[in-house]
Image (cartoon, rainbow, N blue to C red; front, side, top):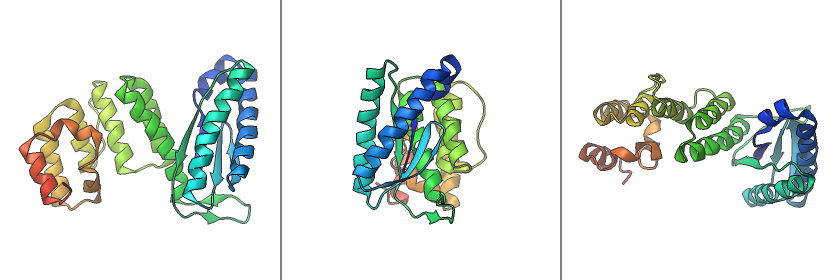
Length: 226
């Protein structure tokens, strides 16, 4: 399945409501065509976003790439250039009598698209924008430890002394603050609790500054993640 929405739609709506509505019409037209071509089905449109299901992961990826190419082409030609972000997730959903779908997979697809944009913004130093996308990711899947940790990380990069109360999230916040000792202390507490969040230890880019520390290397080896 995937969830897609228009980048910068809220800001455009406040400046030019007519242009924003035209973008929605274009988005829905492109999405219906592309999803059908890839053997998928559009479940629903929500404002500037849309949810679609596919019988295969390949179909979802093909449709996601096609809609990201087709939509900007159409909008640029119409004089209001805009892009799309698409979050793709492989998982089970529950169909309801009203033809809507529910389940964690739906929330995860929405979270992925916001989290990906948050990461891109953070890498390029656009931390206020990154934080806004983090908050949207949390709204899509509140309580997810990875999203909570990333919110804390960006707050730390912005100089905000705010953390989320899970051991892994606290460790990530300290990593963002550059406090290596505290970050590793909290990661050891995560290890002692045998938290499932430790699966991120070897791949989490927010912990990159810790990787050369022998204590981090030891922890990774103990988890057999090296």
